[in-house]
Each structure stands twice: as C-alpha cells, then as structure tokens.
Length: 89
Image (cartoon, rainbow, N blue to C red; front, side, top):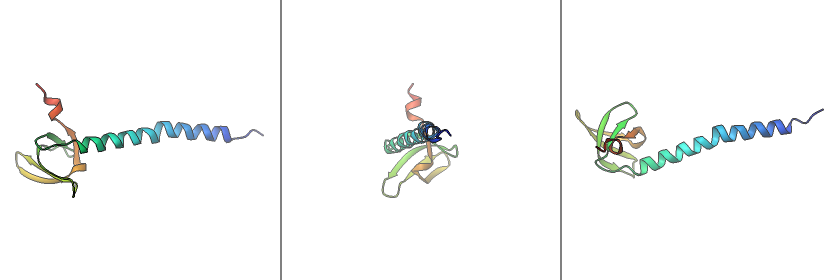
C-alpha cells in the first residue's frame, strides 16, 4: 500500500499558495489603501456613489463624504476605489 501523506502534503501546499497567500495580500493592500485616504480625495463607494471625502474619523472608522445630493456618513470599508490618483491630467 502506498502512503497518501505526500498527496495530502501536496494538496495542502496548493491550497496555501492559491487560496491563503493571495487572500492575505489582498487584505493588507486594502488596509493600506484605507489608511492612506485623506480629506479631499475623490472616491467611489462599493454601491457606485461618486463623492469627495470631507472628514475622516479614525476612532469610529467612518468618514463624511460630499456628493452632488449632499453629505453622507459612511463606513470606511464601503469605499471601493480612489479616483484622485486616476484623474491626473
């Protein structure tokens, strides 16, 4: 009978390299993105709202954004992308 240990070890390594490591990289990249947000940056929320950041509150992890319709208080985690760096013209 052959041992199944090498196959299990190979499966664990594949799982590690294709699932766990990319997840950690994506998570750290997102944390860095949210940490570097500043007042005045143009952003898009996860729901598609385009706005500009007016205030940031690190204690409650929220921010106040200004849209054409008015001001909204949202969670920082609801910010999808920053447009300020993409609009350099």
